[in-house]
Image (cartoon, rainbow, N blue to C red; front, top):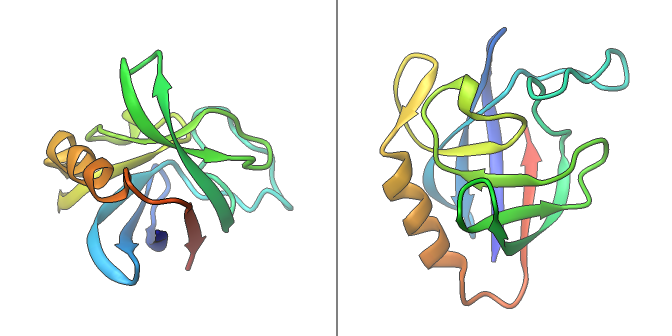
Length: 132
């Protein structure tokens, strides 16, 4: 399964994108602020991950007490999950899924993460490409 996250809106406090599964639109995304890490420092818990392609595995999250998609080997980051949330304060460097029908946030996130896991759980290999 190939996931693609296209970042579309870069705001001072957050980043909004669209998530595609095998090139088919699935949902919107909410991330922390974009920073060009070749030119400025990472701000812990307030910086989205770098552009690139990453392996995704399903792993148990102690924080969320459930199995979630986890991005593997993200430079300068660790424990990056795709999970539920609504606002930039919920991201902590991770990717939140839902629908961007409110300014600066997403809705229906809990239902969306359940649907995402259902779609990808039987895949042999999962990757995500993050791009503009």
